[in-house]
Length: 132
Image (cartoon, rainbow, N blue to C red; front, top):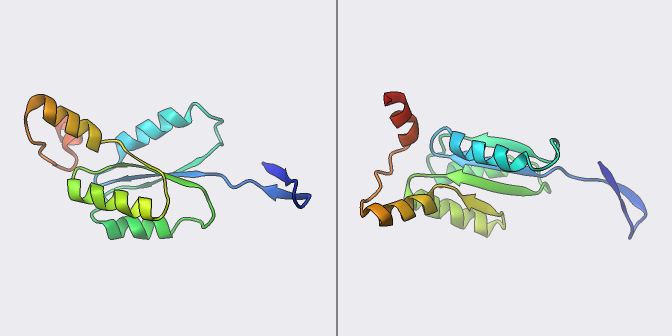
């Protein structure tokens, strides 16, 4: 899709935004949420790219650096490790990239509700579903 830049009278190609799904496991949970949200928009409104098995903030930096410059980005992530979650959040804020932590707030609420500490086990849902 192209638009007319009224300040220069030039036709400018719109840049398609990209949503990055980043996880310390496969990222299926975040990917499902992104697909559900994206279904509310035109089918070609955005692209989605995944980084599964991110083990440290450097993995995230490398993935971010590989994205096309000038392209609008948002990140949806699921990290079980609280420190990694915090480090990634700070890295995204530092770069001015909007993000959604899909797992952290839910785990915090459930921890308060149950009075239990979370296991912080990567892939816990996958493992639980496999054992059923």
